[in-house]
Picture 1 (cartoon, one colour):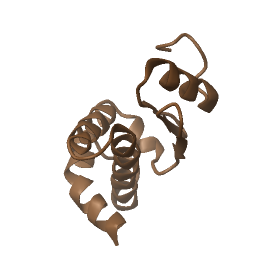
Picture 2 (cartoon, helix red, strand yellow):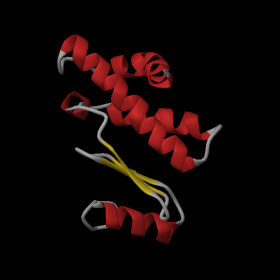
Picture 3 (tube, rainbow, N blue to C red):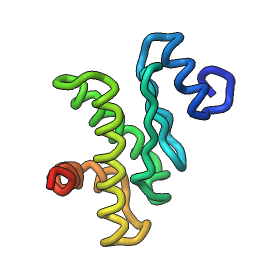
Picture 4 (cartoon, rainbow, N blue to C red):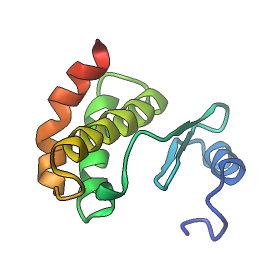
Length: 114
């Protein structure tokens, strides 16, 4: 919507290259691109479509960007946040909220490091 075009991998990559930035496009399959490299993320579930989960993701990406390049921060943030949502889904089904996703981030990161 931001660029007035379909949010597919080709367009995400083109806009990231044109604007010299990293784009993380959330969706059923997240698309992350820096204009040179493009990856997808399928680690998440429908329970994460609730209000606030994107804010949790944005906050984690911003924190990760303090010590990592923006592409790595976006990709890692998407996977860590999605894994937190999947951990909550296993416990509660889809009945969880954004603050619970935020509370699960450290445990998600630790599980992914193994």
